[in-house]
Structures are given as structure tokens and as C-alpha cells.
Length: 387
Ligand SMILES: [Zn+2]
Image 1 (cartoon, rainbow, N blue to C red):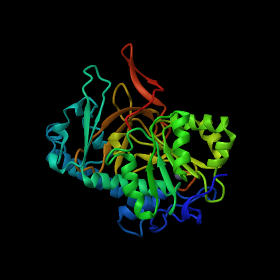
Image 2 (cartoon, rainbow, N blue to C red):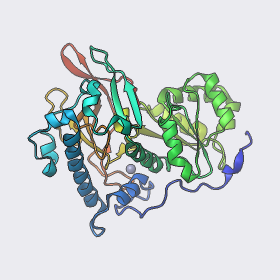
Image 3 (spheres, rainbow, N blue to C red):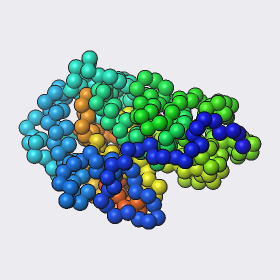
Image 4 (cartoon, rainbow, N blue to C red):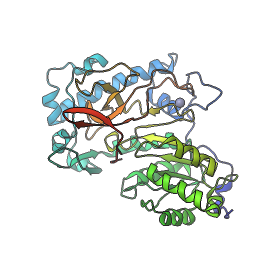
């Protein structure tokens, strides 16, 4: 195998600061999700209460504060949320509030809750509507800091102090893009973050991996399928990047679309690494939720996102465990909060505690997107994009 460069062959240490352990019971089969320790440290409250109860209280407080913030500072929500008792709202009351759609945020200025000078990152995305007008999303420094905090917690499962993380996602190299946020988030933990070429050709992948010798990757499923094909065709290359001791690729975070099980399993076996999937979109501030080693859905940024699953036709909220359209309210978002944003993704909220022991909310696999066909909304497995 190729020589392992740098002092990164030392035994890995967690990139995550170690807050107190979660109070939820854990299974001996899987380590606890690092998001629980992160959430528990953030949610505060009466330490004598169970973590799940304190988290629920903190989420409700964050929901009410976000709704009041949006109604006070955004032109759109000042109108649409007028007359609701936002300071005392609960989940049932939230269901009575109007939705926000992708078409609404074409008029992004109406959603801003801060001055344009206080916006650090503005992202422009295409919409699928008939007008084709782009939608724009704004993030303040505080919004990006919360995303970085999530990245630090989630990535601690896959990359460790002294290691190199290569980010291959398209657009990741932009200032305050995914690679840059990961770099800022993980640098204090001693992880070096590098941006690779987003092209998924065999030649560019091979060149990036040989040049950077990463210990972990963040890549989209189509890039991982290209990597798997390359590894299967080129045994010498596969040996050179395979995990051996503390060298080679030990962890892969898949992001941007749903990773198929066959690719995940084959990569894990070929490279002797761990592959975990991530759910996110630009609207969630890139990061949304991440699998733990039990791989039973995505552990959500529960203090940053309030998910609902609704009937894609009537808009009525569906019970947990039933598939419908994912609707998200962004908690603690400063620059441009989104209230009951219809993502178009078909998903479920899982009802059973995770095998890692976490009691925190989890999103099931995203089955595809709802599209209109002959006047009806149907689920189609189409690439999500945009993250
Ligand atoms: Zn879990």
C-alpha cells in the first residue's frame, strides 16, 4: 500500500469535544449518536429531567422564539402569521399556520429578518416552477455557526484529530460552502479539510485521492458509485486507498441524495471503511440529519429543525410513521427563517427509538420527491440536488 503521509497514523481521537454523555439508554450493539451529546449540551434545562423531556421543552421554546422573530422582522411572515398566538403555540397550533413554498421564496427579500449587510452567505437555487425564477436563501454568521456546530458533531463519527477529510461535493469549494464550513468547523479539532474536484470521472477521482491521501470523504452518491467502479476495476488503486491501520479511507459521508444500499455495502467491504448517509438541503443550512452506526434513519438537528409530515394533497399533518411530504420549520434561524416550508421530499418520521439508544427525532429514508403528474402529486425517485 502507499505510504501514509504525516503524523496522522497516530491512534484517532474524537474530533468532538466531549460534553456529558446522553441520559438516554444505549444499546451495546451501537455507539450512541454523537448528536445526542451535542443536543443535550445545548438544550439545558433541569438536569434532573430525562434528556428527551428537556429536548422537547427546548425545541418548543425555540419554535415559539423563531415564529415570533419571523413575524416581527419578515415582511412575508408579518402578513401570513398575523393574528396567531405565536408565543404560546404548540405542535397542533403550528399545523394551522400557512405553508411556505419554494415559489414564495423567489421573493426572498420579503423573508429577510436582518439587513442585507448582516447576511454572510447568499445561495441562489433554481426552482422547478413554471416561471423558472431562482429562489435565494440568506444566512447570517450565527446561522452558519450553527451549521458548523452540527458538522462538528456529525463528522466526529467518521474523521478524527490529525486526519485529512476530502470534500468532493459540487460547489463545496465556494466561500462558506460545504467544504469551507467543514474546514472552519473541524480545524479546531485538528482535522484538515480539502476540497477535491466535483467531477465524478475515474481520472479526476483517482487524481484527487492519490494527491490528497484522505482518511475520510464527503461525496455525493453518484461520485461514490464512480469510486466503487474504479476500486473494482483497479486492484492496485483499491489497495492504495483501503483502510489499513490508521491509514487509508476509514469513513465516508454520503450527501446530496439517497445512497443505495448496494453501493454502501460494496464500498464498506472494498475499502474496509464506514459509510454513513446524510440528509440535508440548502434550506436546512446544508446540514439536516445524519445516520448513526445503526443506520436507522437520520438523527436530525432537532434544535434547528422542526419536521412535520403532511398529506401531499390536503396538507393535513399525518401521524408519525406514515409517509407524506416533509415540511420543515427552521428553528433558531436568524437571517431567513422558513416556517412550514414544503420540501417536496417524500419521507416519514420514525416512531421507534434508535438502536443506538437515542430518543431524539429521526427522519426515515427519503423515498423520492413529489411531482405533479396529470393533476396528482406522485412520488418519483428523482435526484434532490441543491445541497
Ligand atoms: Zn441512532
